[in-house]
Image (cartoon, rainbow, N blue to C red):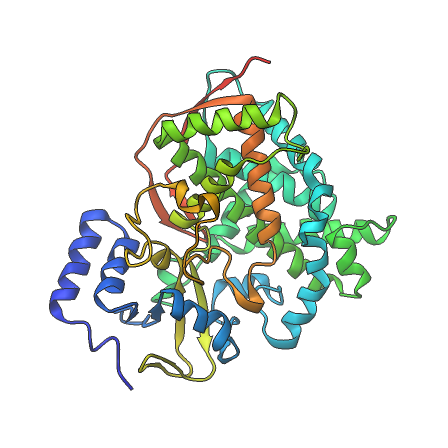
Length: 430
């Protein structure tokens, strides 16, 4: 077996350290390793020696060719402890069962049913804005995403509950975000039991209320009709709530940041939307074909994929072109590093929506913001439609000006802009 860790020479380690110090970013350090180790390396930390791969061929191997050699479930991870038996963290027949129940509710054919709810919740949030106010688009995007996911999937009007559930949700996201627990798995982590309990009680309350109410054809109804008990329903609801809203939050916030940094593209998009919508809400009317908006969303997902890596456990050893990852090890495939690979993307750090215009092609598995293969993101179509509608409605009704361009990528539960995306908002005249 060839060890990636042993192959890291002193010069490479020095470059890694310099990059980390200069940019204060683990992602920058990983890019050095990725480039010098030919898309295959082992993280050189004392108690965390995960193998990392990237690139189209490697992604295909992880997501399709050898996906049965890999397990999603990692019992010691906070994600598993939080989501328990959620569809995201179970394997085999159990995963297939839950996915078969949930997937029909999230197909593209059902998306028109959610359009008006999405637009209305955008308007509810923006109604609280004051003209000329500076708002944090990371916060506002989260408010919108939470309202949308609770109403569309569970038929819950979350508006009045949002203030007192806000902190528990943020605390739960913090609980599953990377931290010292990665290197020191047994380190005490106080302060999380109470918010997790609060979120559990809230979800169980929704389940109990629904069991005594008239049936509804939403995701919660699908889970109940399938005969799942309350605990399993809680696990799927929490999975969709956390994973679904947090990824949308990051995508919306990053897209606004990129538009703020690129005013020419922003102006072109405004013109496209004005011509397409003709003053009407974006209820997917006939003839609305916002090509530039779609390209901008795709480029935002390339530069800042919310789920920037995939974490697996190796059940059977895997060979990557003569480099072996033994059974029992942790394997990470890096979406972020693949999306910034200069051998695939010209000027990979530049914001260029035209990469995705006019049906331009890229190598298979070079662009994987939603993963791929049989376990591709269950909410991919939903999330893209949501981003399209929310962005269109916000840009239709407000002008946005980026106030502070000093933003960096933070590796939390998702890859999100930190510390914030501050933008001044001015309501457009009808």
